[in-house]
Image 1: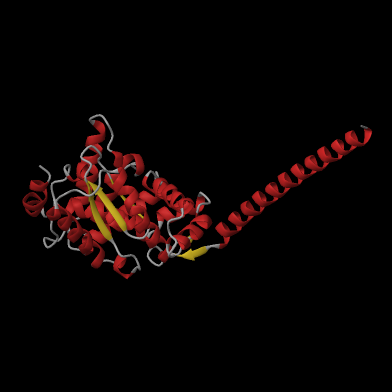
Image 2: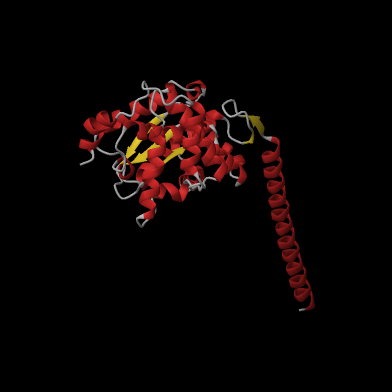
Length: 302
């Protein structure tokens, strides 16, 4: 009996020792991953060729492209899918591509694609890293000129080339894990549930990301440059912000402002930028495109 009790005590001690050992191993691994994440964040510094800023980003442009392509289906599922109007899809894409092709955005590696979401109740536009850009029918219905459309698409193109979404992911320590997830997603065995969940988490964060004030002001400035280089009248982006601000004052704020905070004096800043860029007045060659928007877009939204 004594031998049995001794044997039982030894077994319990061994189990307790094993449990403590496993706990220490888990703590060590957790600390190791945390240190690795911090090192990865602070050592991954690169200069953005468009903005000239030093940025801490874990994802390469190629990985951003894969993330955007993988995340496209997540967005379509959440926002009612693509709007069933080839005419409107083609029109929005043509305006978006014009904004890209005539600006420095065309020199980036991102293959920009523009999508109209079938969501009349949501007034929003947003971008995923890598060049996937979305605009809802709810926002399109608020617009009345091609220049306004170019303004919102230029703003989203600016978020992509300034890599604001990827900066956010790096700050959230998702960057290092996403590098591995995207590596698997790009391989033949891309159906891993764990990797799919990681990408879905990243997409959800970006779609619901509330950009900082400086990100918004930078995207306003770049969007202004992109649309005017495509020969659109910059009054369009001022009118866009005025439309959204007025919509906000009428009651339920547009979703655009839930993810794109409205900096103080935003419209005044844009008007000052117009005066600074065109001290002799806006050239008559820059188009507003009210007639083309009324002829092509508005009938497709009824």
